Length: 321
Ligand code: ACO
Image 1 (cartoon, rainbow, N blue to C red):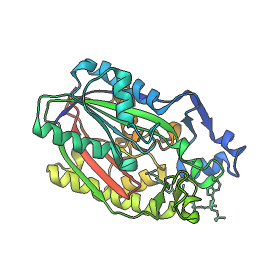
Image 2 (cartoon, rainbow, N blue to C red):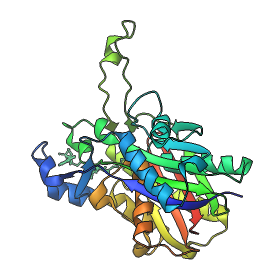
Image 3 (cartoon, rainbow, N blue to C red):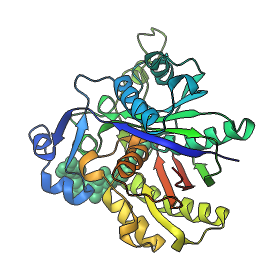
Image 4 (tube, rainbow, N blue to C red):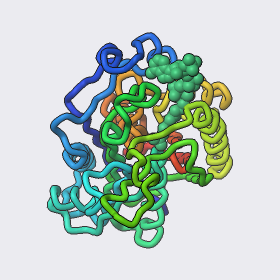
């Protein structure tokens, strides 16, 4: 017994930031961003909080699943950029929804939604008769240095949600972590502690990334995770209806699809308009494609992501809504 996806939802900020607009802020160009990443524009929070986005996504997922807030047994949010260090985004969301179930956040960076699915599966193994709201939400706009062209062009903000209910449609999941700070990190603040060493406390709370190192890791680790999850589920590659990969760079996605020898049309993307929304990427993509009527019952969907940690995950799900 695992679970089934009862419904999906997603939400984006209203503000669109185009590559042209960024090229007025830092030394970059639409041509560079498009050709190196596949991104044309992204949505960035201006008035919205991350809780606002998570709330909108959750309401849509509840509606899509015909589930009342009162039926929820657990809320999990995957995020690295909650509005507060504490309380968690999940608790802020629980209060906004008027839910009364336990709620917590988890951090596996961009792989957070995949890790969240695995945690949910554990809860369903203990009690098959329940409903879980899983949200992937991030506002990377608060973590990037807007004067650093090599990172600020890559990200967008957003939230995606699923309501999970009793079922047996998670066929297999594969997670891994290769603890390594250097390739991708955001330092936390030491506040105004008078005891902390000056050098450390002066580190800016912005994302630092070795792009090429992360690129190499991303392709290798996603391919490996997908192959492992297919093996675990005993499913041949040809049976995959769609691959929903993390949306970090179209070149990473293309390289992974080529190595997996999957037809390109089976790989779904939204990076051109969304950028990398971190833990929200795969959840937003899933919701957009659900709402577009892309999936048929019985379709096997492979979700995969990589991110800071460094972390990786892949899952194989049967669409059964
Ligand atoms: N505009 C113009 N030029 C730029 C920009 C920009 N926005 N950014 C970098 N450049 C320049 C560099 O300075 C460099 O110039 P140089 O040759 O004079 O030194 C040149 O472009 C090439 O830079 P590279 O880093 O080699 O470019 P690359 O082709 O590797 O692309 C990129 C960089 C897009 C960051 C790529 O490496 C990548 O996508 N890496 C993976 C990123 C990723 O997946 N991050 C995931 C984060 S997930 C999470 O958990 C948050």
